[in-house]
Amino acid sequence: MSERLVGILLSSFTKILIPGIKVTIPLTILSFAVSLVLGLILALVQVMRIRVLKEIAFIYIWIFRGTPLIVQLFIIFFGLPGLGIMIDAFPAAVLAFGLNLAAYNAEVFRSAIEAIPAGQTEAAYMVGLNYPQTLFHIVLPQAFKIAFPSLFNNLISLLKDTSLASSITVVELFTSAQQVAARTYEPFALYCEAALIYLVFSTLLTWLQGYLESKLVWRSHDNANVTAKGRKKPMVGI
Image 1 (cartoon, rainbow, N blue to C red):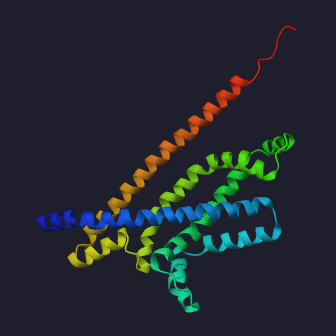
Image 2: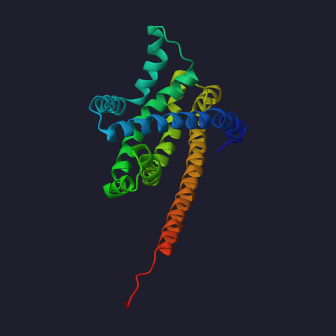
Image 3: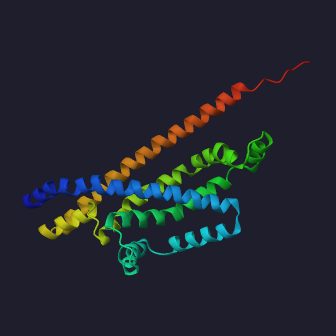
């Protein structure tokens, strides 16, 4: 490796990293937040079994899971202005990523909710809880624990997918690498450097996922132990 190339990589590192911190990470967080809220709503619509709303949710999921993300980005950023709807690049990216991932998160939430034994819902009704109380106090807390690993995997995938925002002029991590590569004529080295930064971000999220999953497991074990200690032992020999 030549001294020139080493100098380029060293000088470009912060130029690529800073947009990653200031743009890529906020873009990921905001898009994921949108996808969580909308995904949960779509999942609840499906499990409530209201036919009309369920069909709407099915069509939404079918469309967004069945079409390429980059096409959705182009429709929102380049297509909507033709209908008189102007959206800046960053909000357009948040909207596209959020709408797309919501379709996947909806299926994750739905599967998790349906994995809760029906007996728990019936028991909640027997002790006087209504449907919203049962849903928010019994079903969703357990469903979230089941869904957590898949949701976090979707978050890591979203972080990498944000590189597509460069196609609609969002100056994020990958766009910055493209700009430096165009000036220095060293695309291979610069794109490898960008890939390394993405790898670091993804690895940090993976470690965070493992830590949070272990916390959820220990909390579940603690709750189970408390419940077991609270039970009365059967009286023998009476």
